[in-house]
Figure (cartoon, rainbow, N blue to C red):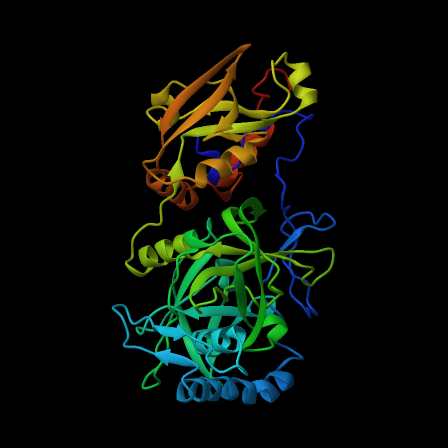
Length: 452
């Protein structure tokens, strides 16, 4: 049985509710304006979270052409601010990242002016063509080699990709992705064009209330900025889609505007340093309503470096299959608690098995965080690092037990799943993937608590 973080779970029975965990719920990915609707990836409850994904390019082309002057103007603003000592450039550091000191000495120039001037040259607009139409998002210039960091959902299933920088369009190639983390790296040959990689800051230094700015192309409006603050830290959610689960852990919540088209763009601090990759917003409508989310830069950079190096992006792994416990099935099956994550299967030799966790245990806490569902358990595990030891509290019958679990790597699991995706069997004259057969079997197998 595979880790629940990366695959379907055996059904608990007809009384099993959806396991999606607050604070943010799975929704249809918006694409505005969108004459050809995209296929749904999940239900969209009121106020649910949405990818700040891609605006359809059709109908925006004329507008975008009219905005190219704004791109040139942003570059000119950098020169003006440097010339007047509002921002002071320094030598480039290893890896090609820029280092510009934000020092708004002129009383007519605010921190926002200086930060925008520093960050705008390092953010591109990403255009994609898909089987169902066209779309766009944003990206951050990562190094002088032409690597660009963006969201996986911006480029997923794209037939062609290009980026726009300073009014010029360049073809882009996909270097690699980590769909589970919603991150991707593109590569562009900029030729003789000199590019300005974004200076990387540390998201671990952020505090609630810190000033931040979002930089990207909302609704196709290239080179747009919006200032706000860090509203909260360590937000987590799980979104389900056709290609599997995307786990968003330790997200930065901000009221700096994040709209469709901002996905893959930058969230920067008061020093103009990258502290997050803009990714989601939460709203009743197809636009921002004061709550946006960004993937922390510390994690995004770790993933990007592995993708660029051609390495497998690995994640923390506990070696369990779990299902959500609620009041109804807890009463029905005589459990001693009415919430938590029921252990359906324990991977032999995995971290949980080594620590002593057994099938039938109900996980109620991981690393001191209360666990109310299987999704919450998944997110709690992924919020920790490979090799980290966390305390896992379970109810075994009426007895409460605590185990020290040293989290492993899911690299072997990923390889196993990739092999399953490539295997097919012949069913009634048709080739069916082994992965689809396993999912079908899991949908109809017995309830792990007993009965159907």
